[in-house]
Length: 209
Image 1 (spheres, one colour):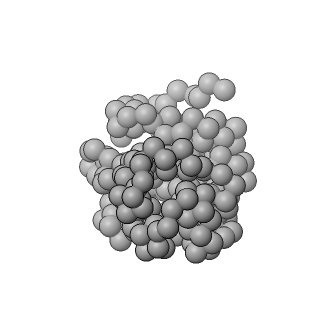
Image 2 (cartoon, helix red, strand yellow):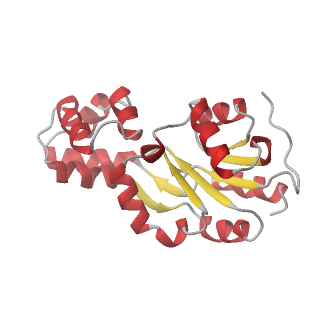
């Protein structure tokens, strides 16, 4: 499906993914932390870590953090405490994406901003405090772990569109994953695949922002 061209006045709301669009992530940092405390190679953990059904259920709030980390400890074959697993889990956050703060500040003066993230409780607790000022630009942040729905499922987009109260075709959605872009377009949103900060600024410029 070819997205419609962006032009000034084409949107009534902007919807942002958080990871790799607003907040910079590097999962290698997590693996390095765990490996250093478990006394094993990063490659060992990389080969054993999987974004499987348990991972997805954790992101939808269907299982507790304790249950998820207990299963993770087994799948990785490591003996790390929950505290060590959580600290490593949150090491994924590098900081703000380059240049995102003024971009969001400028955009928020023109249109209402929202965010939609596939995430989990430990990450939410971490980034909500660490990046509170930056995230304050959003009128609402939809979290998979809170709403029980995650991208790219159709019902997840439908839920967010209803909550925003703007027709899907008047919402421009920014995400770094192709599967999430495809899912959004199937539900009628205008979706922009963000592979670099330049993709976001170019799209906003096309919208007259």
